[in-house]
Length: 246
Length: 246
Image 1: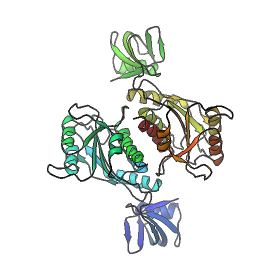
Image 2 (image 1 turned 90 degrees about the horizontal axis):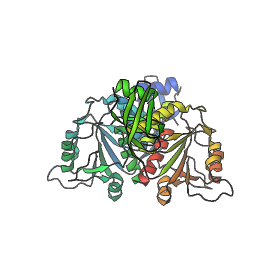
Image 3 (image 1 turned 180 degrees about the vertical axis):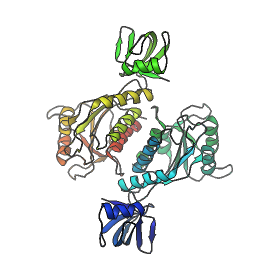
Image 4 (image 1 turned 90 degrees about the vertical axis):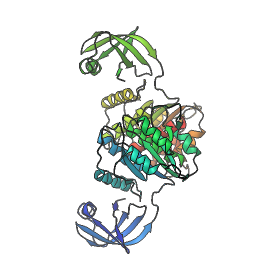
């Protein structure tokens, strides 16, 4: 099943442009009148008939819509520090999308060796993974922020009341003042469906970052006994949620 | 922590040769008298003192041994068909080792596009993954066999009595005569600790392969609602066992 992607959707019309149009017309040789399948990236699969076709622009009329196509029963936001080797992070992006992830934040930690991350290429990888794994939703990737900025933006600020979101931070050291629980136990005990998981860089989170996260409502967890690379830890976090709701 | 690998171990001596010796002496500049850490690939970490050092051969005396180093409480054998793109299979090998896998069998199915697989490179990847993830055991990789050969070799032959091994086959089609259960449910209900999971090629198992497997005691399972690539399905199977025993 060939899936296309478009955000240009309005009043019963859907337009493919750029690579999507070229792929549709030049590679797959679709013509006016053909029916094609398009995801809008926000969860819906569209069945569309081609009205006018060029390699630059394909205009279609929407015949039917399938909402929540290939969706999962939880909302997972993974905040993962870029890996030294970019291929490893791109592999994580593809797998996180395949397994089921809604939002990804590249976070730069105190111990991060790589402090720059470009999201344009990441977006392409996520679109292609969503199409390949038959999901209507393309995980949203945010602009990179520092770990502390992420905690400030997504933690519970002092005085704010519980909002039902499960916030987890996975690090490797053990702090007797706040022992880590198993991610499996914490997920199984959780009755909501909105989860944020922070995964640090190769050098792990700093103690200061971990303490700030805990002070903002993040629960320290471990991902089991195996020593996992950053990208494997991130995929394991996605799998933990996947199995929790399986 | 720098880990070396050797199978040349006997009467209190451990020898590094080939790449391991060159890396130890030329790259890390170890000298006679230095203490190094070596895994034997069968689960044990050795602390060794260098007796004689050359770039071709490093002879050491074993000071202490740590058995079951980085071990896990189950035995997992993954039988996974080689992917069209070899990088994807090599990625699976690395991740399976990191998460925890004991034995890997490349299996060629009726629908496999790639019918040839060389294990020499796979062995190097597994050794390096075991060292990197601090495990004493290097997963054993078998020579490739056909799916039917694997089933004959690892299934329960007619008349043979139950041996307590949990045999699973994950495929994507649904056969009303034998509905698939969730891998999570089957693992949670299992009280043993020895699991075999078969994962098919991009084209999935054939009906005939699936029926043969079921007739030999393999339980048909699904890996959840997401549509996973072959290598992602294989890693998800490894994660399923990892979480079952977490």
